[in-house]
Image (cartoon, rainbow, N blue to C red):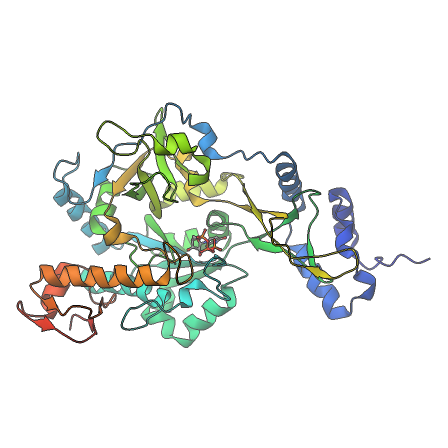
Length: 476
Ligand code: UTP
């Protein structure tokens, strides 16, 4: 009998055999040409050497995570600089001046990670397209791009922006940029790059999960996929050509993010950090944020799921949690640190996530499990922290810089209504500082592209103005 898989390229076939994954060709004989090339296309992007590592990890369930390098029994919360705190080792005014210099000299670039699938929110495309502007209904991309425009307006230099997409978000993100004038950004200053996918495997057998006869389950390789994908796409060199020596990274689902905050950038520069990061105070042990910890001069972010309930609940004599530096995923790296890290293979460890992933059963019918049946693999960008020579941690107020959109309407936290309230609250506070009152229950929103800070708000209205209709506050 002839071999049904004889027209599968020989190198691929032997890779599949070695990896024990020949079952992905189970339906090959019945596939038409288009389906065969779809499957081959997917198989071609799998790194079969790396796949062996995935399988070993899945079998051992052991994660060689970076925090393993930190002994939590003796680790502490590292000293944090606080925005605006005159008792900081670096005076806020010095930091602000240094940050302004960096921005005015065009030495800062930005990296937006926007490759996530937004499964909790129930996204079918990029989360960046979700409208969150309380009055404008501007989407997350528009609000975040606006911040870069406001910095350009103030300091006269454009911020080169690299946007990471994934198989889940790439097409729609590129279409949005093309159809909406790059969200008001200069296309020469926008670099879109796509992160890799990794296959999900059956938690028991380590086998790739076919979810159609010509397709298997893959998922973006985590926000840490940024490191390799940015370098491979030429993004690090692109930043270099734009003169960016410091790269601030932020996530698409936090419309309050302050990656280009002058004082933050200034602390980073003055302290000569390789890696700076923003944190908010974690107040309750159950808050689902990772925490920045330090031990023996090494820093790491420990995920909330890796912190035992006892350690998470421990408090210091000043009443703060022992591990209270809640990571909000706003970082600043020197470009040279990312260049070095990108050149090290396996700089970032893989993390395992147990998920419910649909698969074809033996009869070829699609099964939609309700409990986790599979393991997905992800890398996290904060795992670069232990590799950094010098880390600077900057504490900010959550109300100023952290309002993540993670969950659907009606959830206890991080839902659209919480984001809405946080944006309105921010606008009302800045208006109040500028002597502008807003009628009870009226929504106001700061125009990201023209309002950078209180100075712009003060320039938008004379003191004593009263606002009684919903509006977007713009600086003329
Ligand atoms: P999350 O880990 O919260 O994932 O991403 P998510 O995709 O937004 O939501 P869930 O977990 O599926 O519900 C935090 C940030 O990291 C980006 C996301 O786009 C978001 O900005 N991210 C996450 C990536 O860019 N790539 C990934 O593979 C994962």
